[in-house]
Image (cartoon, rainbow, N blue to C red):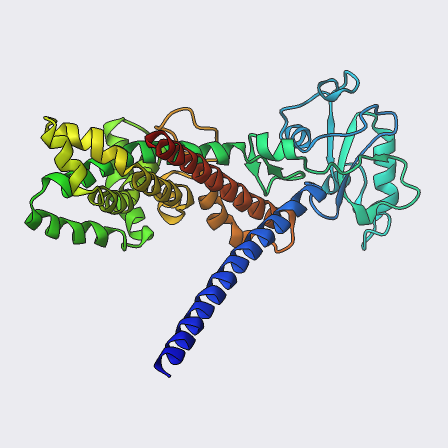
Length: 402
């Protein structure tokens, strides 16, 4: 009877564990699918402001303009049609409010009833015009030519250099600066934290006496529980002014500040996991190395570290994941400038910081909303690639040992 009951309990626990694992796996997959589904809708929409169109004179040979060209034209950086494949004429900008420069209020009408005809006449009478007007004011007899809406392409999204979702008349969704900013800050954070964290882990596992280790380990683990916003405040009050003063910069919110904060945040994870991995090295292997005449330090870097490399790799993965996915601390100290970084001493913007800063302002279902989901998908892919690469290197080392 006892054996039957024991088997029943074991089967029940196994079922609960299997069900829990299955539900967790399905939930994660559904989240990933939802992320990619929302983000993929970005490439089926126009970057033009909803309800507005661009119109040109029918004699204009330009058939289409990219979102970047539209922005450059209305920013005054492209001033001649020749620069976008048209005639060698100056571009004449026109917005609907400019109609008062051509007609009186009486001609327009108290309720704008004459506006469709007047807009048509203006576009028809000026050969070099480009008009940004509401679509509702264009009737069937409109004498101009409406430029087709340009859909956002994968190339423009991944390699575009400008991220300006509120730009008018055409929003800019170039994620290249955000991708490079994320990788730049995370790379330097890991380059700082991994050697330092590994050194501390080796000290705690192999060199420190038990009293020091028993005191140091809980303190380091406690650092992992500090909210990221606290690290952000520390960086904003201490690190940012220090960098500004040390390098004589106009502002201290730079990639260096973000890298230092992320390095500090990643240290507890790297130290704890690496130290646990190092301590799993069999005592027989250590004693055999020492018996063959190797010094303590030779044993550490020739026996202990190679044996625990998979655990150290896991620590590196979690540290990189913490660095790439961090939001609040980076948002507070990096300056949030969506530019391609060239040095550590200039402001940058990361993908998580962009999502956190703009999600509340993006209309649900709009192109800006979907662009933020697409950024989340990119972040997922970046983390996945890093995990695969590190796992491949770790497995390769295991095979070479055999």
